[in-house]
Image (cartoon, rainbow, N blue to C red; front, side):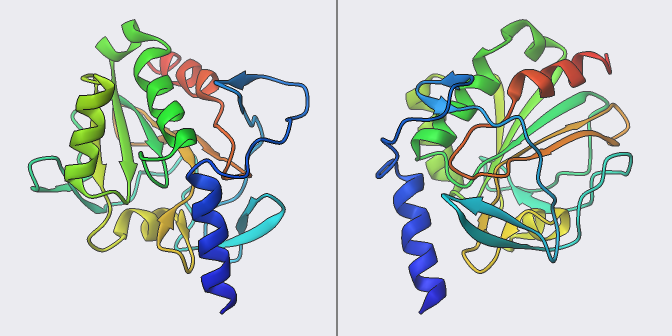
Length: 210
């Protein structure tokens, strides 16, 4: 019963209802607070949703270690090991669902905040959305410089990086930067799921690796 209630409340907030309260003074994007804090991934840790803890599960991702192998699904439905890099620096934006206001704003930031950076850095979004929903979102949002991967099949990305919100089967909000050798050099697990990550900091970390 508790899990069901948590799931209903989380989805309500993610869908944009009940978020009209004023934020404390600070940076905002489209009226959504940018959170510059950092949580911890993995078993035994949790993120918050309006003061309610949401437990995470899986092996914690760590800066300085390789991004773990995880099979995700590309837009053409082909399986892809996200740890198989292409020799480029990557910014991996992790969202619960692209069909929510906060996740939409986060994805637009990834795509539009520094368009020149996308020429040198691979921009990636990972969510639990079906590949069809991701493709529709990208088309409607006119986003062409972001690669979308879905973790809907097994949740292996969430589990292998400690970003699985347990028991909701949604990914925590996070940003990961990997270098050309697939080593994690930057990680922000957003402590409050209804707020945005510090995309500027992630992009600065990526620039430093070029």
